[in-house]
Amino acid sequence: AGMEAKITEIPPGRYRVMYQTGKNWDSESERFQCVLATAVFEGPKVFEEQETETDVRYSHITLTLHKVVGGNARTTPLGPSAFRRRRRIH
Image 1 (cartoon, rainbow, N blue to C red):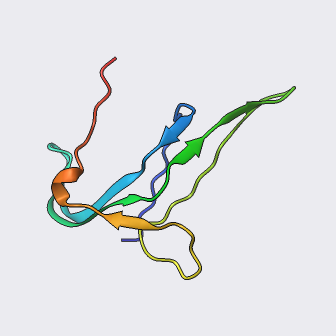
Image 2 (spheres, rainbow, N blue to C red; image 1 turned 45 degrees about the vertical axis):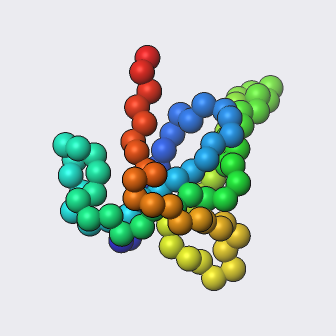
């Protein structure tokens, strides 16, 4: 509760954003020992790069994981097993 995270260097594309909240984070297994909620934001989130004459501009998206009065992002609940950390293999 009350924490923030910033993710940078996301390649351009359309992404499905899923999240999970819980208690007792286990950093070794990278998962919660007690899962409270798992959900997916409806609709893809689009990250874009736009080159200008002097620099490159990037999309900036802010998401909250709690309900916001007047908010416009809807979520769909998922079962805890639907959320699995995916690792990129280079």
